[in-house]
Length: 353
Ligand code: FUC
Image 1 (cartoon, protein in one colour):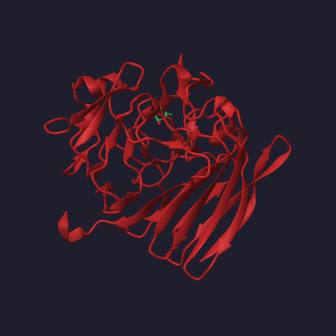
Image 2 (tube, rainbow, N blue to C red):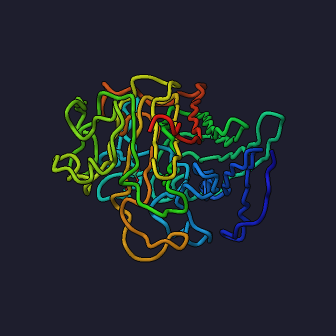
């Protein structure tokens, strides 16, 4: 195993470094210390062709102007906070409004748009990069000085693990996620409509017309949201179900996970034979099928368009601060925020398809 470091670009006169972790099976994960962005993940298909399976750019400027959060760490709070305001201990906090009247993905300058410190970790079992960031009291409107770290580690079992840690000096909100757009076809040869997904989830969250949870948890049975047995992404894209149409035809929905660290999310593409298994500590996953990726321009040589990638954003349920019956992601002073999500890269068993 090894880590290869080089300069990726420059932001505000600071050099941005690129780290490529490589295991002995040839799996590669590349990340940079701007937004903790994962720029590339190279894995083999069933024929042994090594190709990229995440949307990304080659130049730092594309990431600076990008509003898709490609590969980035999102925070302090992933998803939308209604009205860009919340109350904690009787005090009202106003957040930056960056989507209509609401707050999205940590604001204008969220964790995806800041420079992180980085340290390389290498041992017999794995190669890793530890990113750290100090988010000052009041940043984007949130209370508390917050110190966070995100560790990306790759092992010989072809697992990428993301470990999130956070501490605050004042009660605050913290609900981070990773925003990679996966496309298992390899180098985006095909869109994700024929990717099959399996999720151990019997409930998804109803959204309003601003993509914010209404508070209602709905049963997946008999709907395009039923991934309890594998189902294609095109099921929801082609469906007339009002909840698929509401989010621009497809998925942009939080699912409540029934189980953790138990193969709870599996993405597969038969043609390439690639599989991605996601396991997490988190209570939910937002499945976003890339409905808002615009036409025009190129993404690593491929014309930009809808459904070119799928995000599987493991996290606490969105806007929980306004829904007391959702599990809380309020972080107390002195408490540790700690969460792990693992991504295992595999190949389908050809005997079963
Ligand atoms: C996802 C979605 C949003 C948004 C963003 C880029 O997390 O929930 O709707 O489009 O990504």
